[in-house]
Length: 81
Image (cartoon, rainbow, N blue to C red; front, top):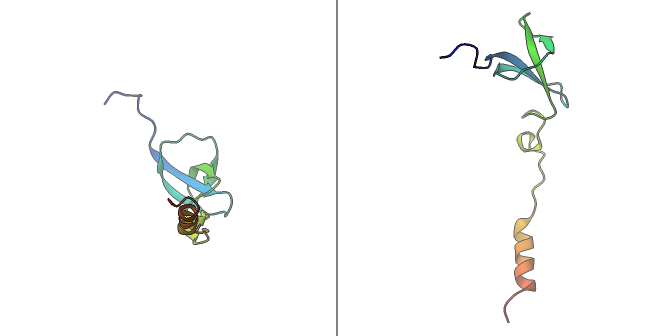
């Protein structure tokens, strides 16, 4: 590998701003902010607006749209005569 052309792959903390949920993972994303983690070490911090902890799909609060009813209504309205 050529030196100095690859991004720095390191441990980073992602923090969900809407639920204060945070997790430690590895990433190449650059940031200037840091946070002290549960293990006492300081890691770069990435703030995100939504994560699996607050997204409606993963929390089970997603609204289900009745697509079948709309299709039936369309077929009844434009049925061939």
